[in-house]
Image (cartoon, rainbow, N blue to C red; front, side, top):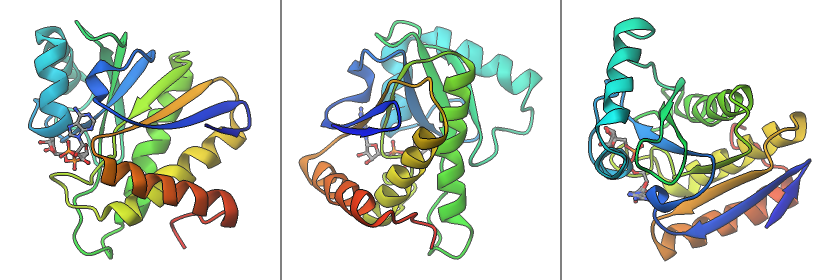
Length: 189
Ligand code: AR6
């Protein structure tokens, strides 16, 4: 556990759909209509109520789809978490297509929305590092440094969990955490 401002940051190995934090984050795509990976698992376990709310969001706020780096909130349906924050990470295209900025925006917009919704604990998966192909060494530094930056500047979120799906991913996040704590690396330099 690492304390940044008033927020406790945890890394763990597990399944995001089993988390008991107020909210969990979905690594969605811009259609908000579901998919594989984290997205598939959340919709499967959370039930149709989540998809129904996503359809309303598409009809009202984002008819053309949720842009990369933005975030929206729905119920958690049958999940243990009360809410799901859906965000869209960037697809890795080699690193020169604003991927770092867009990934940082995805994390930042999730946290800003959590603060607005008075969510006090939140769990993130490793956004973009599955189907979207973002190299996890790079993505983990951006994820952690963005969360640290937000936690330093805002009070109100007590716990931020990163739930990694393999021991290998956990080791990479652990190394990135040490690096970010020691060097203040922003991931965007
Ligand atoms: N709990 C925690 N982490 C998980 C879980 C789980 N249950 N399942 C997978 N992961 P991905 P992306 C890890 O592909 O790269 C979907 O089809 C996984 O090992 O879920 O942002 C969407 O609809 C990886 O490290 O998300 C989009 O089309 C990380 O979560 C697209 O994939 C993210 O993998 C989004 O791709």
